[in-house]
Length: 125
Image 1: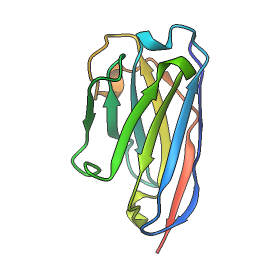
Image 2: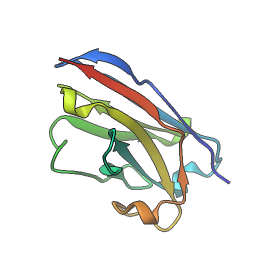
Image 3: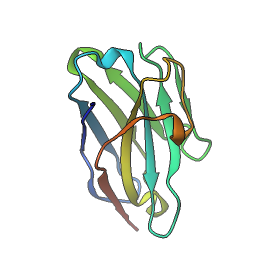
Image 4: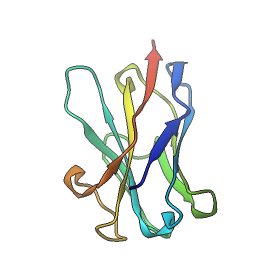
């Protein structure tokens, strides 16, 4: 059982930046593809970014491409999401997820086995 703990959320003004972190309990963290998702009030959870096991490849939703960057440090069992130029519509609970289905870029929520508890990001205008 993999436990994921997100941190780094908070209240930020529009145009600001945050770095979200997600640390895993699993010693074989490098064997998991990782992803970030978010869920805004009254909306469905949406895919944001995914990264391969090695960290060599990443994939982004069109809505965040160019503003968000996913990365990972396998030695620290941590995946990051750098979020820049934040907008009020980015307000949501942000979740990280881990998948043992493969080491490619996984975008489908159904392919992720493990989820963190989420971290709130609120962007004021």
